[in-house]
Length: 185
Image 1: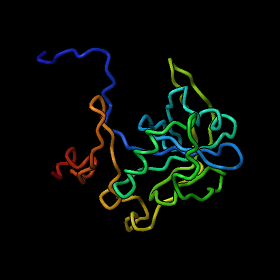
Image 2 (image 1 turned 180 degrees about the vertical axis):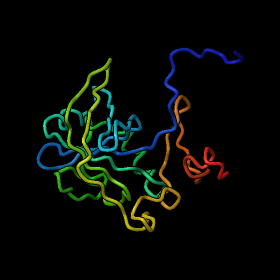
Image 3 (image 1 turned 90 degrees about the vertical axis):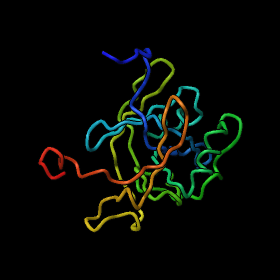
Image 4 (image 1 turned 60 degrees about the vertical axis):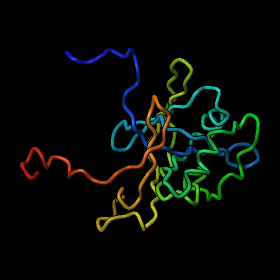
């Protein structure tokens, strides 16, 4: 076979880095840094958060969250958000924000945000996995292509890779999907 078995390791990285937002006490937001997310269909995503996170109870209570995709312009602030526990310190003032249509806090610096309604919470060992319907997607016009879709070359989202715990850059388009199969490459 020529491959070494490295055990039961999660190997679906890199993934986009995002700051998850939810409304907490007194109408103030709280935030957490995450890269454990997944696509569940064209209109649903899953956000996986360790159960001790301060934000989890507010997501469950309010039923909405925002997924603020991090780019290089504000990765330092996002990283700091991941170092501070909401259980020990308020993160309400970490970011300038606006309320989305569904009521989730949307980070003003985020060029791409999905506002989601929580449909279910699936628990696994140590994690709350929020099954979410995408209610609204907000995009800065500067990152949209001529078809009105996000242009990831213009956007440059930050990616996270594990097991080395590094942030990495997206490095441009290799080729259009299915172009190899069509003999266009």
